[in-house]
Length: 393
Ligand code: SOE
Image 1 (cartoon, helix red, strand yellow):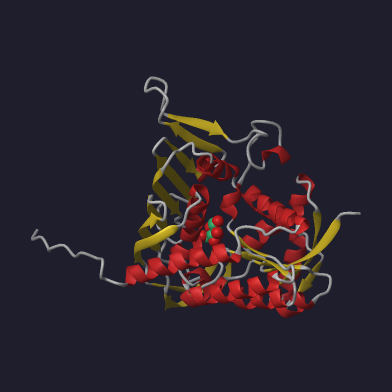
Image 2 (cartoon, rainbow, N blue to C red):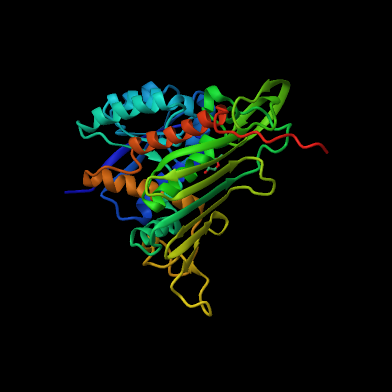
């Protein structure tokens, strides 16, 4: 029997659309996959711009209405890379039409939407239709290795989970009010956009879930110029101003079911930090540390080693023994951000070809959404906030 081919239709072609496109283009060239993806069509509202993107990114065709994309018989999988307020409607319609769905993170803008999406995914699953949410950082080899080492018990009992996701792209108050700064389009700000990643990545590494959280959020710049145009993370500013309706930064603490304490920070105001993701896990036997700015490394501390030669050891995660690396270059050659998406697509196509369920599932996406909502609610409530006496200066 020959290799099965699956037609893919993608919605959105900005930053995430470009990242997914390179993954659709490259996954089958590096990984031995049971299913071959055909980049059948991309969808955007402006025909000329979408056509230009299709040519640039390698898609065969173009649609300007996502319903028409879903209706096509030559498409079996829908990849949703459009803003959060479109996820639920498109995913539910695609699943009902019998199409597999890959949906960018966060799964939805609200828990209620995410619940509807899970309902639709469960129903579709009974007909062999599968779904996945795109938390790409799980597929960074060093993060996948961290999960493996924790799973093997190398760290012992997990006590601390410490994570930061730091960016600075809106630190300038004149940066315009793009869709990511509007609650009705993005759901939340730094919390859902980048906080969601560290919630997923840390839960993935420790194989445990948050049981409760307490949060603090802030919007430092409350009004911004209205944008003239916007694409990905860049935009032009027009006349007039509008209110920023999402958080600029979110901090929260949490407790995992297994007893570990977690601390999380997600901000777009960490000057000089462009896309820094730092994760440290401390267990009874050792620790692990990861920094996305050196994403091919994982630092491991074995508490049983002698003080004389102990300390953190740098593992260069570039060897064929490491997750995903066998498919790439000879030992010692580094990978980048884009490879996490290639791995995501390779894993998805492997599952679809083998009739197994891809992860993270829509249920996993809903659980992250519940964490985000709990942080937002906790930040809005004052019940756990202890105000200190004002000190005379
Ligand atoms: C913007 O903050 C963004 O593009 C996120 O939306 C992505 O998920 C993250 O990987 C990079 O930054």
